[in-house]
Every structure is written in structure tokens, then in C-alpha cells.
Image (cartoon, rainbow, N blue to C red):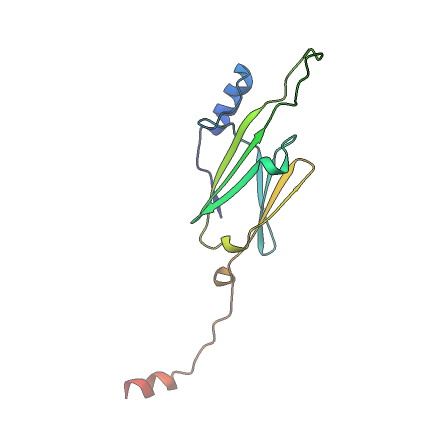
Length: 144
């Protein structure tokens, strides 16, 4: 139901970790993601620790889901001297192509403990259903 859009995303993530660079609006950092089906719902969980809820933006255009977030630096005071800074700051983004069988009109989003969870129901038209078998009499009447 989901399709990866960038085969080099993991390589970019490793390069950013090694070089210590943070994401920008023109070149955002990737965010880790899990995706799985739970009954009639697809679930996408994205790790965004330390990101404020109001710094997360979720858009759906046709079947393209885009999640963007920004982890801002903690306000620094003049009397504080930073000794170590390993947590990445900057802009994070993830795009996911959603199948036509998903109902993008009814996506639910929750954010708890640094995890953004999106729940996307499977469209009614994509759910399995029984097809009745006729006896052929109605087709003869139409032709006749």
C-alpha cells in the first residue's frame, strides 16, 4: 500500500550523522518511519522526539502524504555554556506515496511521546465483498 520515494534517503541520513549537519527547508533530514496494516487501517508512525506539536505540518495532495517538522534549538541564555550538542536540530521531512485504495479524506493524526501516528482507513471500495451470481434469466430478457 505504501511506496518508498527515495532509495538514497538512508545514505543521506548516514552522511548527515557523520558530518554533523542538520536539515534545512531546502534539504530536510529524513525521519524514521514504521508502516503497517492494523485491520482495515494503515498506520504510519514517525519518530519526532523533541519536536513541538505546533512545529509539525501534515499535507495530502492526491495520493502524496508529506510530513514536515522542525526541531528548534532551546532558547539559550548568556550565562549558559554549551558543553555538548548531539541532538539534531533543523527541518525533517518524509514523503509517502499512498495507494488509491486508502481513504485520504479520513486520516487521523496523534502525537504522543515524540511519535506522530497517522491512521489511514482503507477505502470502502477496496474492501473485499461478495458478488452475487445470477441465473442468466435477466440477460435473456434484455437480449430478446
